[in-house]
Length: 76
Image (tube, rainbow, N blue to C red):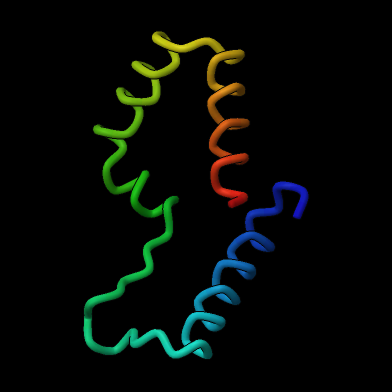
């Protein structure tokens, strides 16, 4: 998607429709889809200090290794 936010949003909406087609009951209020961008903007006073705290505590190398582990873990 090349970082195109419109394409990413389109794919997100498509994924919601897939879940509906698979039978996920979205009408009873137990499931709510939220856009991360809206949550970040609504709670930026919480989000950005946390981002900065993580950036100070961890190196890029350490985060990359963690993501590689997570990716391998989720593959199974």
